[in-house]
Image 1 (cartoon, rainbow, N blue to C red):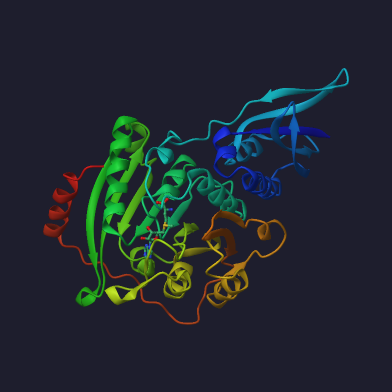
Image 2: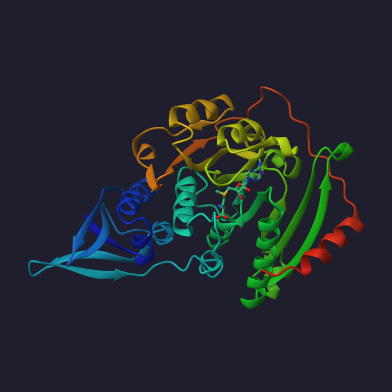
Amino acid sequence: MKNYAILATSSHNRVYFESSKKLALCELTVALSKMSVECVEPTSFELANIFYLGFSASDSLSETDLKIMSKLSFCYAIFEIIEAHEKKLLSPVAKSNYEYINPSISSILKYQGKTNEVFTRMLLNIAMLSTEFYNDDDINLLDPIAGKGTTLYEGLVAGYNCYGIEVAVKPSAESYHFMKKFLEIEKFRHNTKIERQSGPNKSFTATRHIIEIGKSKADFKERNTKFFEMITGNGAHANKFFRKNFFNLIVGDLPYGVQHGNVSNEKPSGMTRSPKELLFNCLRQWNYVLKVGGAIALSWNSFVLKREEFVEILEQFGFTPLNEGVYLELEHRVDQAIKRDIIVAIKKENFERKEIKEPEVIQDSEEIQATEEINENQEI
Ligand SMILES: C[S@@+](CC[C@H](N)C(=O)[O-])C[C@H]1O[C@@H](n2cnc3c(N)ncnc32)[C@H](O)[C@@H]1O
């Protein structure tokens, strides 16, 4: 048996402190289920007054295992615990350099309504580790309620193709400009494109901000690239923007039903603060674009929607919620008005109750040009 200890990042402890420890243990527990060797007894403990998470493994962790461990939202350093001379000694284990892009990307922007980036990384990890895609290289991630894109930045750090939909014009455009600037500073090769999309008789309109990213010139030439796309549009139109079964993961932080409104349809009268209404308007389309075997992971304010009801809603739209064990221990208090919880559900088969029409794309090159010019002048 080998014993491992993970030293948690200081930022992790600062943000929620007590509940962060519980959440970290949940994330670790989900991760241990995907290790190549048998791993047991996820726990947290203090050694010389310092907080660690730990577990026992039947053998040494493989490279893939270490990559999973290194990606954990709280992981600062990994050690093997060695007992010698009646003492516990920590022997450092090399972390994996898995990051596709500098992880500082998700902590640069500060704004009201931002989802904490450490929490977002945990949400993303729990979603990914709940699927069988966790070891795949080519992952498509969608955040259909993307705000200024924290999920997408975290997804890009993990090396995923990242797509976001945000109904509000300002944050979605800002996210695109921020990303462009970051890529320039970090000297990534990238191509940008802005497209307008609309439905018949303008039943919907959207602006697609698309960036293709390559680490080097050679990568770009060989199309060894990643995609980052932020759509200014309604998450309820996900099926108009993307083809069936395109995404491995759908991850998002639902409006809390407190401060931020959510738009459930195109009419101004569709403004609602109810995440439930948003779900009813969107889940069919989100199911359509998710691959069989893919996971949807959403965080939400459980003061405004009870878990049992959320489970029923997801089931109604053809998802299978993971509603047992560690998945029931993710609720935590954010402030007086928000008790945040996480729900994860798997798409086990295609949801065929009603056929959904294939996307229809109408492009207008003059409009595209005009949008590009307006956006280029915006400040980040
Ligand atoms: C809690 S915020 C997400 C914040 C985001 N994770 C971030 O860190 O920037 C929820 C977002 O959902 C957006 N939203 C609400 N209804 C929407 C809809 N129908 N389609 C797309 N986005 C929507 C809101 O405008 C808000 O930005």
